[in-house]
Structures are given as structure tokens and as C-alpha cells.
Length: 365
Image (cartoon, rainbow, N blue to C red; front, side, top):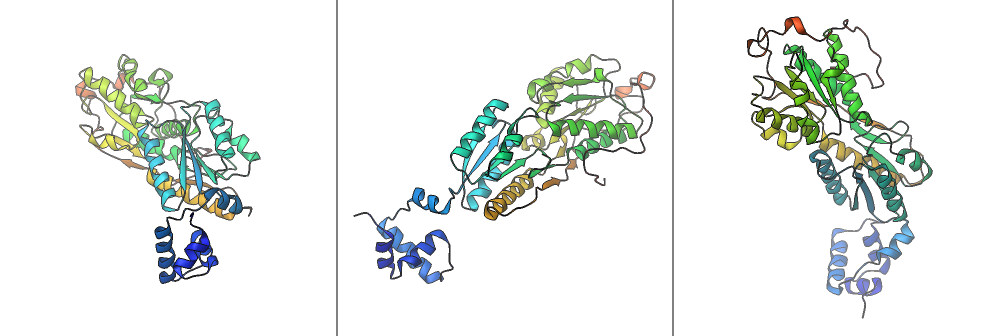
């Protein structure tokens, strides 16, 4: 015979309502009573009818997570942090991978909504994504992760500040000919890294000409295109890559080409993925607080889920990055890299910048 709440209550020596309170956590129970109910459930192999209970409570205890790809160490780490945090809070995770496709991303979000998830954590794939506009018309709470979306709930890094930190580091080391390996400008956080980087360089009277910018999808292949920069005269003495994966691709090509890091050329990445610390020498990078981003996003979403129909104003949580100085950057030698003169062949300089209004919030440092 199939076990019921009544049979569990009889074995535990409590009222059926007490078993219901235990299962739904709707009333406090003494430790002894809770233990009796738990043992009775185990002895009778009682299984909760989740479908019926969720229909009554209008909750599924499931959260949808959408990320651009799972092979990215950065997105993988954030997804793992969010899944672990959700598990601790009693939620199951439904993971979707958009593969950077706006159409696939939109379809996945629609599917999650049809599955009646309690909320969605979303790293949208690009500015072409229509998800932000679509989600305004649904009741499922959504928190955007690693992307700042105006008038929506989001948690991300101050990418503008991160770009400034990288530029300041290279400029103060004496580098004047600097190349950029730029990810897709259609992703706002990448655009902000570049904007912050170039602004900070202007404070030192420097700029990066277009010829010294290599643009493309943020992956290893973009890093391999550092050869385009190595053919320029004067050759860059330092490189800023808009993420660590791109920096690692550039690293491999430099080593294959006989360059020594940082003696011949310095490199700065962005993200601080785990593998960056195991390169020889380790990679200097702008570290995103990925664990804090994932944890804060889950906390914000659960607050929204528990608030129900209560109105809560949108909130953009912006966390500060830090510069992790390691062995891949070094001061420029007097007279240039390995003594080769470069002073008479610098890219065109710009006037020092005294003030600048950015769309990013002002941050000291």
C-alpha cells in the first residue's frame, strides 16, 4: 500500500498537519518532532507528490540558468557557484547553453518560462539579444549576470574600472607602444573594458591607433592573431587582451615565435581564470570577483522569488575588480625592449585628459 501523510503521521505519533508543516516548512517544529517525522518518512518510503504540491504553492523549486557557453572557464566557474548556492537553498538548476546565439537564447528562455521555473539567472550572449525586452512582459523574476542591464536586476563587475587598472599598470611600467586584442564590442562589458583602458592611457598622453587593435570573437583564435601586431613598426612592447583566454592564445603564439615573456613583451589579461596562475610566468590579469558575482546573483534572485508579487525596484549590483600583478609584465627597459630604440617612433600622442564623463558609475582608484 502506498504511504500517505496520514500513515506517516500515525507512525510518527503526530497529527497529519504536523507532517504537512514538516514537508512544506510552514511552521516551526521541535527537533524531536522533526526527527520522528523524518524517521517515519524513511521507514514508509514516503514520496512527496511534487506536482500536486507545486500546483498548490505555485512554485517548482527550480531555477533556470542560461550562459553563452560551458567551455569558458569564467562562465563555467560562475555557473558552478550559482548551482551550488541554489542547491544549498533547496533549488534545482536547469542549465541552458545559448552558444552565443540570440535566437537559441530566446527559445531557451521561453522554454524555461513554460516549465514554470521560479526564476532565471541569465548571462545574455550579446547586445543583439532580445531577451531583456521580452522578459519585461513575463512574471518570472530574472537577474542578469555579468552584464549590466538598465532598469533590470543585474550583478556584474565594473569593467570600465578594470580597463583603467590594466592601462595604468602598463603605462606606469613605461610602456608606450601598446597593442589591444579586443573581444566583440557588441558585448557591453567588453566595450567598457576598452573604453576604460583607452581613457586611462589618455591620462598618460597616449593612445592606441586603430592599426594596433585586433578585433574578433573572444577565444583562443583571437589571441593567435597577435602576429598581426608583431609585424608593426614600432612593435608593441605590451599587450592588453580583453579576457584571459585571448591572452593565453597570444601567449602560445609568442612562445612559438621565440618571444620571451615579459622580457620581450608584457601581457595583461582579464578575468583571472584558474589556469592563468599556472602559466610560466603567471599571467598578470584584472581579476573579476566571479564567486561573489555568482553568489550575489543567486541571493538577489531568491529575494525576488520570495517577494512574490511585492514590488521591488530594479537593482544593478556592480562589484569592483582588482589587478593581480604577476610575472607576465615588467618595466620597459631603458631605450626600449632589449635596447632597441623606440622613442622616435611612438604612435601619435593625445592631450592629457583632465575630466571624462562615462556611462559607468564613478569609482575611486
